[in-house]
Image (tube, rainbow, N blue to C red; front, side):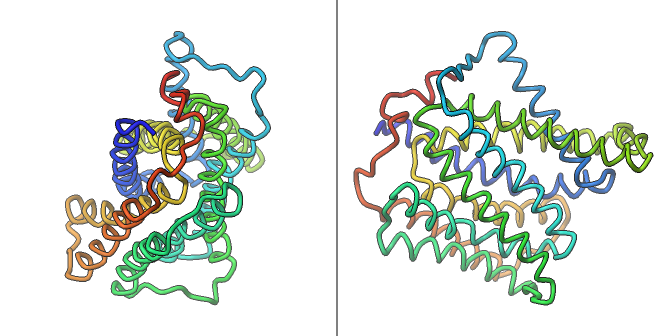
Length: 318
């Protein structure tokens, strides 16, 4: 495997986690002005519009001829469609803290699915490192007084399914990196997300006679700025980089980086909302970082990359 490509994948994985951590802040702002499904429609409209510019100008070449499009459609069904839909409905029946705790288990679900479908093999030390990172997130939430309320099983079940959806996306995207470039996968994902969320949102407003409410948030500058961040940075850039990372790195190793977003969320809350950083925040963050490092340094040497990484297929078409 190209060391430079792997090094870039590590840098992008950390960057992704930082972006996702900040996205919670911008999502809160957006949801003050619009309903969840409307926010998703505008979010993916922004991301699809931006990625369509270089495609229309011919700067980014897409070629789907002879490729398994049905697998790419299944990928989009998992993420963004499945992930964000399950999250939106799950948070109606559960708290955001419960969502954060359950999301921390995504690396564990990814590890299981990657072993089952991709035959990815991890060492005992890697498995323990993944569990350490999960423990770090859960430790922070529990010390804040957050727990999982088993009486809201509907919400908990839906939020757990977001883990399965994202883990499924990671595993399938890793597999598809042999046939598609990161840009090709991303363009399909964002296009399908935009079309479906827009249709659902407009249909809902049309049925309720509230179509003016759909466009009302566009008069708010904070909403527009939040949507631009969520659409361009948090959706487009992270999708492109995630698909590139999965062409260079095992799904189980990439997934553990998602828990770093908890650290970014803590930092963002302290910087922009004046939230206090305590000893348990620092201790939990150390567990997370140690888990991420352990997962990526304590594996078997010479782990095979997909054919796309070996041939340079993934990055060259960008």
